[in-house]
Picture (cartoon, rainbow, N blue to C red):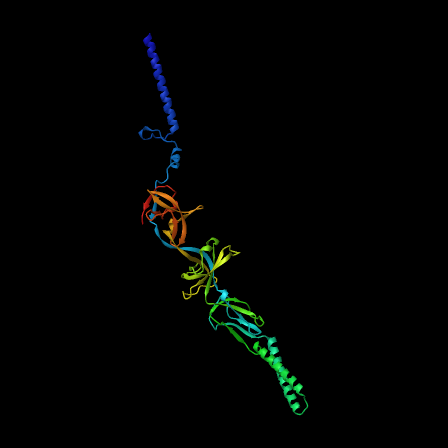
Length: 379
């Protein structure tokens, strides 16, 4: 009896276990879907959201490819940079005035034009009123001459006194003086041409055709054929710039070759419009074709020679806080603050905690951060 009960109990337990296993198998297939396949090694397949999470968690590159060079320590020209405009030197300009009372009938030049000595500038004619005054002076002189002759003849016949003759002679002298004054005013001249007294640039034209300038009225200003650059520099750089410093001038509007010159004057006040300090630069003569008046130029002033590290321009970076470079230390990038003391175009002179034995990153420097691993390639 006991054996029969034990056998029935064992059979019930076995059936329960089989039913539990069957229910678990159906639940697993419903979760995985009809296309689910077991992972290698019997592992359950990953859910649909797991690959995206794994992708987002992928690490960045283990190293950054860069190119580095050794700094070159040498004397470089410390420079101050500014921008300016080519202008004729108005400080030495000559003012052409009207020698007579005239009418301007033609203007042959424009402002800013470069002229040669003897080149026609204006065509003029005597002012009609001045010409009338000249004719009246001539008539008065002829009348005074006849009166003197008449009184002298009467004096011989005792018909005129000596005082009458003296008065007539004085009137004749006054009339002749009036004729000479009108002649000096150009009232006796016909059409005339005003020419340039020397080579130079027309700084200003002060009259137009049809004007009737009085005697001594300015007609134009002519500056000698020597160019001057008006340059604006930062106020903090003023103390570095001195009269006589060497200057290189490059046009920012044309392909003209660079010109050289020297600082002629340094301003002592801020320009009210630009808020910069004006520096006058005089270009060296005979250095090529003259630059156009009014041309915008980039000016570099050499103020001193300093000892610095010369680096390619691509190696020097800037952000809101400082200027810096990246050195290579034990296969990692190290950020080093530097100060710029010279700009030589393709290369920049800097000062800082650098060494000619420690390489500086050039290509690829922009992507680095302090301490990242770099994969160095040397040129």
